Image (cartoon, rainbow, N blue to C red; front, side, top):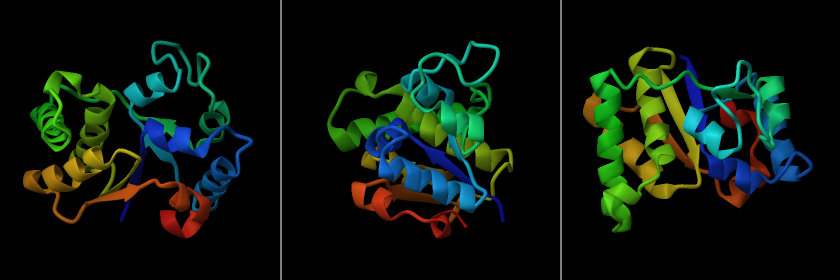
Amino acid sequence: MTTGYIADTGVFIRCGGPDNDKFQRLRRALQQADASLQIPQRIYEELGGNPAADEYPSGNIPYPEGLKEGWIVVANELDYTNPLISTVMDQTRRFIANETNRDEDLIEKADTALVGLAAQLLDTREADHVVLLTTDKPAGKAAETLLPRHGFNDRIEFRYASVEYLETVTANDFQ
């Protein structure tokens, strides 16, 4: 079974920079497990990267080591022409808006991209199972609620990337 791991901006912010123990612990865990965190291109942009550049990493992204070492991977562009992807992203926006009592227009596109990427990985069979690491509880809840409605039962897991989680993460979390 292939597991895809997706991370949001909050995971990297909570880890701190490359000199931070949480960052190094996450790096070590992923490398020891021979796993990588995929990030949607919108997350890459939030981290300061330029997806229009010829080669990743680019811009002033503070995590070039992770990209160069391969434990952070910028995912392929989302296929918005796939009705599943566009539907899941629209549903995610509405779900988060309802959960947070905010207007749908105020929901960040990066949040919907997380769930869209999970759907795309499952739909294209790039992954049999997806683990979403996020500090955004409404986005995680949206993924666990919405993706089973599209036939992905028991194939999505939301892990809240709390400080405690990042201080104790090991390779076993990615195997």
